[in-house]
Length: 160
Figure 1 (cartoon, rainbow, N blue to C red):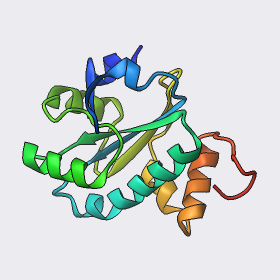
Figure 2 (figure 1 turned 90 degrees about the vertical axis):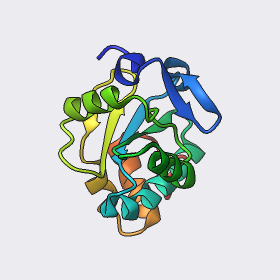
Figure 3 (figure 1 turned 60 degrees about the horizontal axis):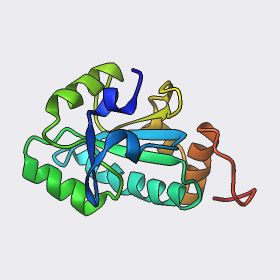
Figure 4 (figure 1 turned 45 degrees about the vertical axis):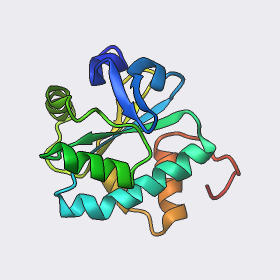
């Protein structure tokens, strides 16, 4: 792995449409890769938590980004699930070969899986993002625990 383009291809899907991958992730220090699917009950329970975590983190840390990697079986499921539940970028549904490569690279055995990378070196910080988030007692606690695990400074010195 040498670049975001190597990982995700030339373009990713954003809420504004397709965007060059390297431009979309430029200046980011941490990247969360969220593997999930519409058809997966645990994913449907966890996705709202990941979405809130993302919103809470990017509100105070403009150097973090997430990307959704879909395990959906149909394009319509992907469109509905990502479009209705996530504001962060996604690997385009058509990039099934990249999805398979990413699953192998990060040894994804089940979904949901949340992997965090150091976006500057592309080294894995943790493959246990789901467990890290689920370990929090309340929203402020899981945001704090993720922020601390990723080495992100507290903006307020206390709660997120």
